[in-house]
Image (tube, rainbow, N blue to C red; front, side):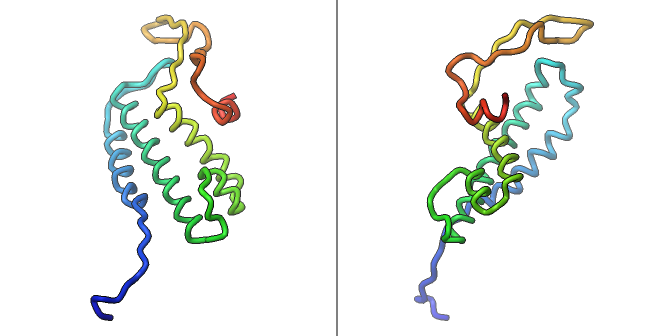
Length: 145
């Protein structure tokens, strides 16, 4: 092969997220954050968890895009859940949809409000939390409701 031979190249950066996700999981598991209460977990643990979720969603979206490209039978851009359904993996598609609902709640900073109270040195909900109007979509309602 000479240095002037041309070859096709299609980028696929999603694979480069595997090690950072594993590193974040390892670091999160090393934390001594204690038990979460009903209302919240430790801010440090929460930061690692939402970072892992966001990166996992990026990885899944990239992997599904690459699968659509390689298969050539599903070239149109679609959601990862739709891609998996198209490939016949309905059960996995449902689980993936949950990840993207959580990713959306993180990325769009869904706001919730609730009455809280302290009982026996523990923070609890006095009533169920309610999502602030204007946050979420039909996918959220389908998965969470």
